[in-house]
Length: 83
Image 1 (cartoon, rainbow, N blue to C red):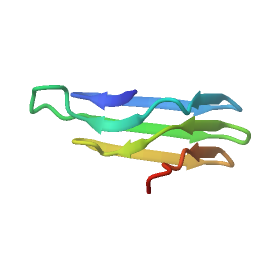
Image 2: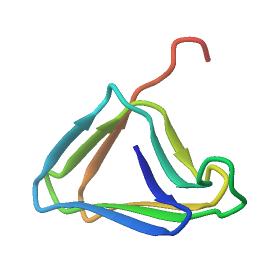
Image 3: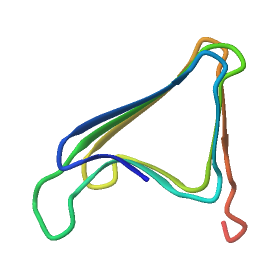
Image 4: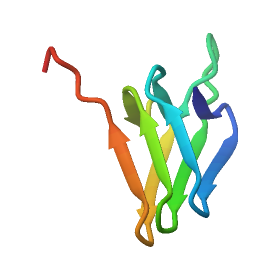
């Protein structure tokens, strides 16, 4: 999943939400295929009991990325076994 590809994108996970993207990679800020147009992506995870699980996470692929985990939220990133 890409947030901010050749434009500006924001995703908010809040208020006790639980999002499981553990089978997927997430990229914040990337470039649209075969163009020179980059994007800005922001992911906000906020609030107690709010959890976001992701596979690989790239912040600022070929664009600009920002990850904010605030106000008691939790984030879980899968650790790659080859690193």
